[in-house]
Figure (tube, rainbow, N blue to C red):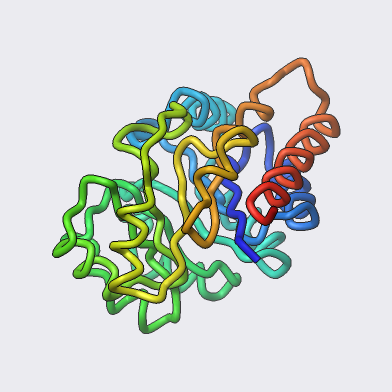
Length: 246
């Protein structure tokens, strides 16, 4: 069974909605929740997720909200925190990982920390049994891929193209997936540009997909009620889970 990871922006439109959506997604095809930490300069994200980040911050999001949300959802769905390094660093990495461990969060996704810098924190994650999700890009050579994947845990996040999330570009990922699998048995999940139209194509040769902008786009639609947003997001994830396993 190929896996589906879903990104949502924590605290948008509000904390209770995030909890309700996360639990609903877990019942509608989502295997792992990528709980996004709102940040003022989300450099790897496209305009859809960036807008949700800014709205959450304008609504008064605080890091304590992330912890409160996670306490409610992590015991019920496999949960990762996705965020940029600055808020994590300000919290303190040891304290952050202790908190994550204590409330059942299983790891972090930090897109703005390259492998070479992330190695400094490897022991902190390993000692707590937490994953620091490894990124591989289509531009990485085989020597670098071998080094990166040697310490990969949980899954490898394969960036589907050189760009930002949600821009819908397309690349032939078969060669790089084959290259990754020569060096590791860690599952490979494809992210960036995954939606109902692209999921079946992008999952070829991979073990799962990561969908974000397609869901967050629904959250930004102010013509929908909260219940309608949740229903539409769940329809998307059910459809994608079916597509990647058909």
